[in-house]
Image (cartoon, one colour):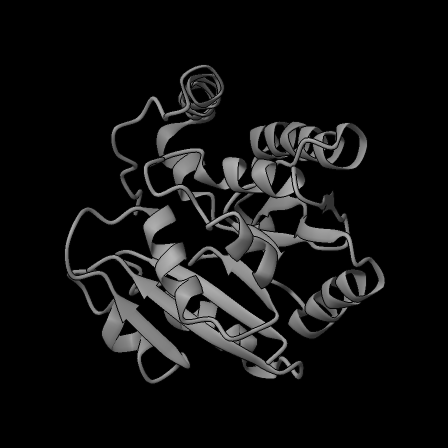
Length: 239
């Protein structure tokens, strides 16, 4: 198996079918793994016949880091792509063929991230401005400075490298994605690739507003850097 796609879910009955079904045309040998946090809606019921594997958290508080690690434990692929539950990729075959070709050509490469975009039909000028700045910062951090950075909407890793650093830190309820890519950059090369464009509905950005969301992001990054833990005590889903 070349590729395992891990999708964390929590109350995603409206999105999960489309997220899984977009990988139906993918010709690269792959598996789709849904890792659910104990959704009270029909998420698991919908995902079960569509995904190759489904795991459901039975105890404890669901967090993206726990769910991604649970999914990764079921992965058999040489590479793991962590994809959020509302992400859309326009051409999955070209997308993953390009990503795997980079890994094959660069043995020292341990992680790839790419540009994030709000779905064009609902994208605002603020989305373009703030995500453009975020994408630029992530590009510079990975490709120029060498300090890995990325977000959980899409991170693709070598499975052996992911296992070497023991995956996501489950004690972090926020910033666990940034922390993962940073730790991976200590053992190999992480890169931002502009060809790996993903789209998502921006529910948190539009639901909370960019000023408040930026404040949350910044304070969590500072807290992790200074104190080794997230400022947030929980990361509530926005649906």
